[in-house]
Length: 146
Image (cartoon, rainbow, N blue to C red):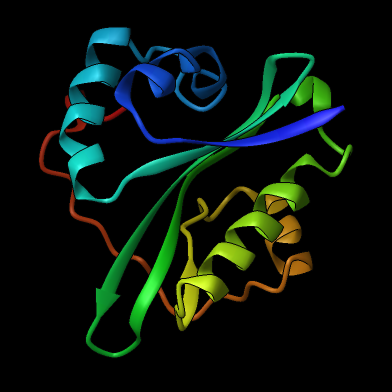
């Protein structure tokens, strides 16, 4: 049975570091905890899906405002354990965020996906997302990236 839970504390999030390592294999607990201590006070939460008390899906999300769009939710670091893909876990998470955004009177849900991650693109298209523009970045210190 799949159970979905919002994680709101640094301790709850740090406990699921192994799931995040599917995206960032070299991520350390010290770096994760340091980043979370900065993020949590700024509306950052996580959504976790558990099967038999084991985390099989995880995503971060934030609520924010943009001048052109008003209130929105941004999905951040969306991951499903590779052994549990194609079981509806990703859809379960996007549906949860969708309903949360509606309840919070948001105008949209945003997310970033790497340009070469075609599997993710297909999944997000199937969930009703579409590209609206480009997310430009200027890397200042590549050694500090996860």
